[in-house]
Image 1 (cartoon, rainbow, N blue to C red):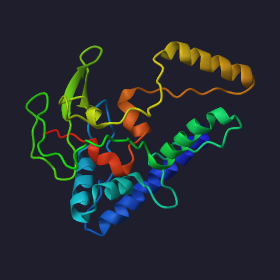
Image 2: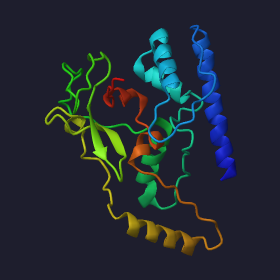
Image 3: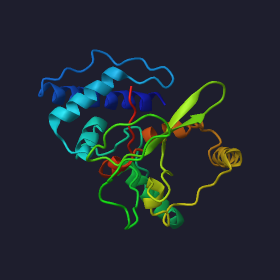
Length: 233
């Protein structure tokens, strides 16, 4: 685990240094230090830095996304904490193995229906007063708020709205894998199977929720423009 953490930190530092070097060529200074994040607070300095660099560089969105993620020809992985798996011996696992490694190398690549518009002609209003002019390159979805335990809330990108013109409506879901919605049972079975197969090996479990989904499994840079929203303030 320590080795993985060291590799993660090494990659993160390398990406930041490369980004700072690119920004310097446009006369843009990076924030002196990364702001410590608490809860859902946004690092405004980093947002301003990325925004200034995006405007100054004039890069297409997909290329800018690759730059920020540190995707290169030598290491195209959008998430440096994900690794390819070796080819399994069981032929029944080959399809899942190939899909996993493709996601590791390129990110998740949605398949779109033929009726997806090449560009969004009008932007749907958010579930509230948030509104800005329509960007030319991105497809904007509306923003909604979901209540959580206590007084906390979560802002979400609502891909199911508006009806008939949403991201979900344009997504070809015919090839999506079947998802099991029995987390307690699935987790217990997985632990039991691993312990039975590897009786003397330490078992690690990665925990997460939907709030980290796009960080753990990023969308392929070529499709990132379809997953955007705008917030004022």
